[in-house]
Structures are given as structure tokens and as C-alpha cells.
Image 1 (spheres, rainbow over the protein chains, first blue to last red):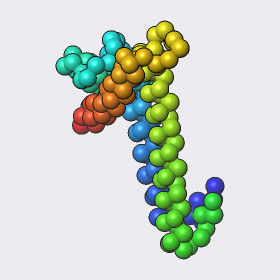
Image 2: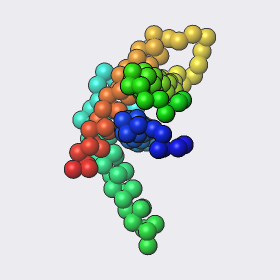
Image 3: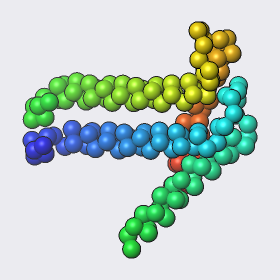
Image 4: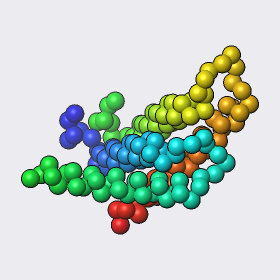
Length: 75
Length: 81
């Protein structure tokens, strides 16, 4: 792709959409993983507080684990 | 896609088209994931039709998965503070 023929406006736009897509992919993967870990029973009309806490903890611990793993890989 | 066109209205049309395509791709993927998760949870022994409780389970499951997406999304943005 020859970037010198693309307007800055388009370049910015594409970069933004790329970032958005990456965030959506991360949220999607996190929800998938944490649903499996936290929502074990039959779905009901609302989450219990332990399910909600589990989902929140899961997402945050996942991100911390990611940082840990990256650090180890950089040694 | 011809990125060399300087016309701003064709830029806008192209950006709109791309945004729509991305939104559609996202919705398609989300649909696929929810379908897999909720079928697994709610239809444990497939029979000759979907029972009322299976349908009701699927409906609740979709709502919960959407809610879970919101919870995870918010947790993600709080963790990065």
C-alpha cells in the first residue's frame, strides 16, 4: 500500500478504525474466556453479585497476566 | 479502493462504507459467539423441537452475554487507569 497517495484524513481514519477493531477483539476474547470461567450455571434473569465480581476480576487478572507474560518474554 | 482521489465527498462515502462493513463484521462475529455459548448452555439434549424452557434459557443467555460484554469492557478500562 503506497501511503504517500492517501490523504492524512484517510490515514487517521484507518488508524482509528484499526484501534477500535483491536479493542473490540480484546473485549470479545475476554468476555469469551471470562464467561466460561464465571458463568457456570443456567442463565437467569440477572447476574448474581458473585458472577459480576468474577467477571470483573477475571478481566483485570487476565490483563495483569498478559503484562507478566510479556515481561518474561522480554528477558 | 482508490485512495488517491482528493474529493472529500468520495472520502466520506468510502469512510462510511468501511465503518458499515466493520460494524457488520463485528455483529456477525458476536452473533456466532453468542449462538455457540447459548446453544451449549441451553440445549443439552436436542429433541424434535425447542421447548419453552430451552427458548426462555436462550433468551436470558443472550441478555446475560450482552451484559457480560459490558462488565468486561468496563473492567478493562478501569484496569488501565
